Length: 191
Image 1 (cartoon, rainbow, N blue to C red):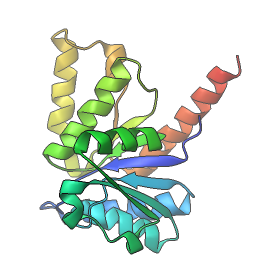
Image 2 (image 1 turned 135 degrees about the vertical axis):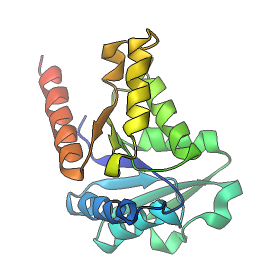
Image 3 (image 1 turned 30 degrees about the vertical axis):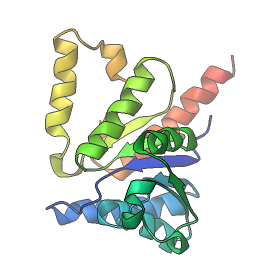
């Protein structure tokens, strides 16, 4: 498997730190420049809209997936490559996971946490083997990372299982990990 599409989970709000938006837009730009495809939740507002619009503005390809009950909050179909409406949130997450070769988690709220948890738990039980990165902008995920490490310390998760998620403070390290992941997959497939 080669990473050709990245699902980005993130808030439909901008958050209080302007750096969240700066990094979201930069991630969208880099996804476009690297000729990768952005897969995201289809929202027009907040970090979701910022990332999608930046990807499109830099010549990239964007697939938005939105449930019918949030269609009024969805980005306009003319603003992205493809907007898919689904019946519910479960179908949205399932499609995002199927369309993506990798996952990046920007700051967000409850929905972002739910998406992260599903990708992580599905990796744990072997339903996918795709890279997952918390993009830790200005320490946003420090507390969550500490809790994840506590799950290992307290015997609920193994150290090996924790390796299903990585945490980086910048886009360059995030993409370097995904490139490394590609190399590891190719080396494994050579045997």
